[in-house]
Length: 408
Image (cartoon, rainbow, N blue to C red):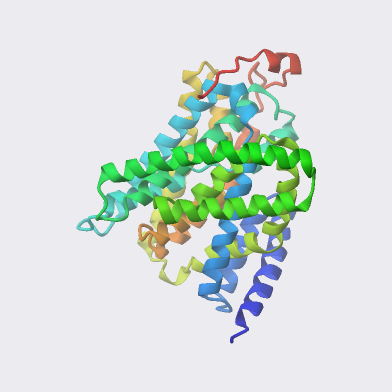
């Protein structure tokens, strides 16, 4: 038996923590440092760690925990509060970046005879649909605008944005098997969501009873993680849908059990933070082989980054304008949605596993994540300087009076 995996874990934990803290000191999220650490210890630079079966499987657990936590963090009340406005902003904010990524890939594609070319282009588009608002939230909090109408619209749209991204990812992943008919693909997706609805209602009631019986008991966290893993397995094994979709909806099932959700999140965050999340983010950096970065790929990386920034500003800005926001506030909403993060990396990893994203494209995707993360706070601070009714704080009374448009 080889014990190299122990050395792999130790190197990844130390390097991602050191570089993560360094990123934090320059007001960037730790994920940026973790990505850089993965590139440095991987084949591109030091060559200490390469891809292995252990790392691939550990990273998969990491991504399942990340998506389960994303589901737990979904604020259903926030969705009800912002309602239709957030939904429209999110939909157009998904369509425009997806079209931009699709066109950008086709423009640079050197395999016109590849029958999967359109699917590959679509997958690059899906990578650009993701939104990570952790940086935006911190920036809005610093500016005192987190509870403003603009801030509320950004947060609500980001939640819907992720749900739409997961659904599109599910559809595209199902189409990767050439023997499968489109009607079968959509049939499986419909059956999966019916399954999620039934199991979700049952498990929600079950966890509600557990909450009353064993408030803040550690067995609840164990049952919750087991539920997430089972949902991930069932999604892949029986429906041919990405495991992260199952994990995400497992989190949503529990997201409005306030006491249980907070307790489970506190445990799963430690589980991810201590081990599995660093392994996932480092694995992305390790896959990013800079040796094969040609001039054309570098140009594609720059073009994709520009498209990533402009498409979110334009798409979400148009959506906000259609919903009655002033031009300046619409721009602020678009700027707040620019940052990509772990969801973009998760989609890229799924694309690579499905054979729709070549490993040589990972440097371009990592560049998109890093650059959009860096520029978002700068752009947002510029965009929020002007005081308008939509980007100033409103009272709890005003918040309570906002129309609670249901999405269902």
